[in-house]
Length: 460
Image (cartoon, rainbow, N blue to C red):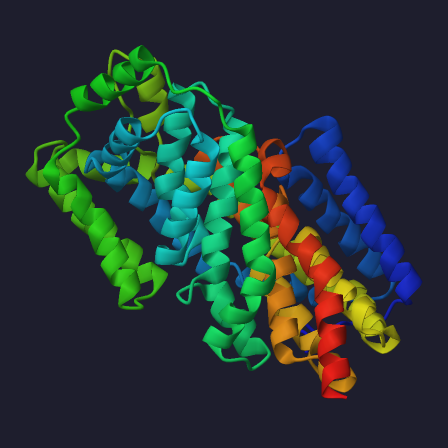
């Protein structure tokens, strides 16, 4: 069931105490002191190594568990490198500037957050990737929000909400396919069943974003200044839309995220060279260090000076630390002990639904990895759902409601660190406004137990 074999079996009470100490320490350092997440995660690793040695787990086993956990990050690390290249290449090809310019021409302050949420959700469903959505259209909306003097916290919350609605409901999404595969549910049955909780969460979020949006339009002089500065960069051409088109086509043909992003980045780079936006020799430095804008309008310089492989190092180092930390939680037996106890104790439908959601959330908080939250929770509860007569669709839905969408709300998680980096808005700043992500687990807990209890009674 578990990817790393536990070398010690703590009592569940001991495991819960250790869990609380670690969460409390991480929260204190990040929220109380304001340190970067790397520090408390590294201290957590030291704590778990000492804990393991006290319980006579050899350092070799502890080291192996940490390495095995970090090994699970390799796929994400390669993808992050590519997204860094994608962002810089989309800037020099004019794709991101063109998206921002188009946004200024059609979007005003009125209903702004609701429009951001809706458009991001549509793009998210089309691409099937929350991270790609945030790094492309999300970056564009942050720029528009700055120009409109809108709240960046609410704007980022709307971007995250829309991106993860798309990640959750798209048949092209890795997490959607994983959740349906783990519990052996047809992909489209899984998506259809998720709509029971996802559509209400979407509608409530949409209404909240309308309520929070400015009641008046944008100042014309402000948007004009941004649009003039974007045009003065010389980056925007008719070819600027081709990298976006290629990315969408590649996704529609169900190509992997790696290949889709690679193709779009290479095309964007070639177009930048062909249009003489950047020299051949200068491209590769931009791939690594990112693009630096030099217009006469500083807000646009700040907006476009980003991207590159180097910009991903903060995220990548934290992902390695977080998943190595997760590996230690398994080898010391802390997570296996809690999950096994839950599986033995639970019998009632509502308690099972609630526990499934809390387990997925807990794994996200402790390990910071959404794939493991889906995989481990699914494997833990699959037999239990069958035993009490709950459908596998109920499990796959709960995995996504409380697993997929919670990851961007954890400051040290893979998605949380990445999104905070590319949008320039800290996780704890946008968290209160990521309404869709907050509502999804709440709705599945409130209504999931009722609907599934009714289903069992009907079958009886």
